[in-house]
Image (cartoon, rainbow, N blue to C red; front, side, top):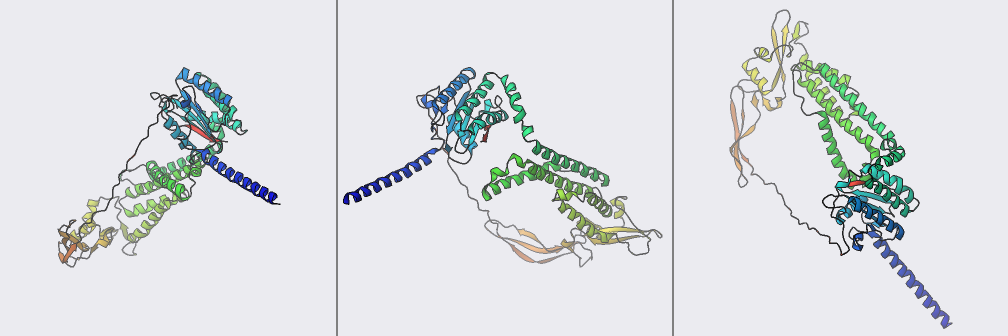
Length: 504
């Protein structure tokens, strides 16, 4: 009985140890499987004729040997360096950033030519990524590498046949590099099913329709603006396309932070499938800027506010639907409505006799009209505290002048002496300027811009200036050099981020 119990204890202990060691082993394998750039073995450590890094043994030794042979031939005949890295998993979420850092860390390609190519594959995540050096981008364009990946890597990888996929892709690349004329032949074979225009025909059609609508509406706004504008020549200012693109750029800048940190789906937002949406937003902003420019041009082309009001009314009526596709234009539509409601009271005749005709300021010079104003009214007009309308009696020829509040009416009061609205509201005249160490002094006063009447309301203290606090920070950056082993190294090339990638 005791022997049975002892046997059970030993068996339990043994099984427990096996389970614990299995978990520890599995955990260590899981951690080790996610490679950093520094942990991926450089194939050149084995010698100059090695181009494949296969630490997880995903590729067979025969496939690895065949790929190395092709890479040796490519370098011998073209001086270009091609590296292949196949791992199960890698550190981080961005395959492009990882592969790009790996490329530059190893220095694939000759330093003076930057003619390197890296094929990086992460099998657990189903990612592949080509990275090209600066000098290789013209020989192996991004679109071509994308087609190579979709045609040779993806079909084999979906069947977990990594040997066949990498070998087929390398053969296509070898053909392109050794016989440039074969690129055309390969393109003709792949073009039918892999054409960008064919793959994204529906998407590009939508984008084209959006651009066409924006162009038509843009030209229509220009035509309407010309048809209702006055005679006064004015400068057009910043082009609506420029200002619209500027607004779009600012919007994209902030949206990057919002979607990256707020929703954590930046990659999903900035995909090709969303191109029509981005074009619609850009088009909407450009049309809104064009609408604003049109309103401003029409407004500035008239000196007479009644003519201006009539022209803006025609413009807003004929473009009533445009704010539906350019919502920011509603602000301009509201501004037109506000202006027309504000000025309409000025166009009511002095009485209901029907004998009064309003003098249009676009039909007579300002200098001619000014002679009907006295000195005080001229000052009111100059400081814009009052704006005047001129009415002529068709029977007697009498001119009547009616005054209304101007844009600066809130800044002026009726002068106690001359009784014109040219008495400036209280302001402070500086006597001693304030500094960062001491306060200043001043006098609060009011004065009339017409008769020079003035009053002093008393002395005031001007607060000391305050320096804006700012802090500087300094940092140091270090660089780490890589040293190859006695086996060899790549040529020291670099990449600006060219290439292509995908999933399977």
